[in-house]
Length: 214
Image 1 (cartoon, rainbow, N blue to C red):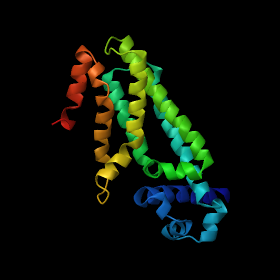
Image 2 (image 1 turned 30 degrees about the horizontal axis):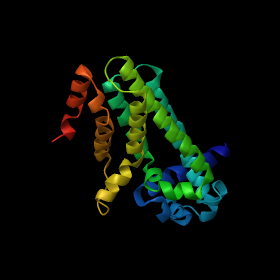
Image 3 (image 1 turned 135 degrees about the horizontal axis):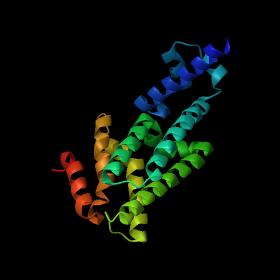
């Protein structure tokens, strides 16, 4: 019975830290701020996490598990344009949920070797998944592209997914990036495919993209 409250406190620390990191940026949030927000003593927090890096790594473990599952999903069967559109929305939702990693990415990777290694693997998985999706469209006759073109498309889609939040922030540094604006990131990633799509696939993408064009 005594273990349950301890686990709950640990979970609350992770949940509170994620919210604060997302709202204010990880560099601006200290363990003291986290403890104050939770109305617990710093000693109580340090009982569960010795420092902020341990909190970050615990959050990253959840992020990695969830995003790897999302990245694996669309490769289990041949996907069409609408499937890819949905997949990208799900991917961007995961990115939004853990957005501080993407907002403070370079700084975090420089400071933390664990994140550096594992985030590199996530990026590689993004490219593999995007490549597989392109190959599926080509096989289905919905897209015409060479192997080199598909590799470039996959890389560019991964770049957009990884740095879209940074782009949105740079466009309006004093504004507030809302989750609804992520749809534009999905559109930009899908727009990479548009010149290579054929027939009904291109028409479907144009239909899906309607609200972002014009």
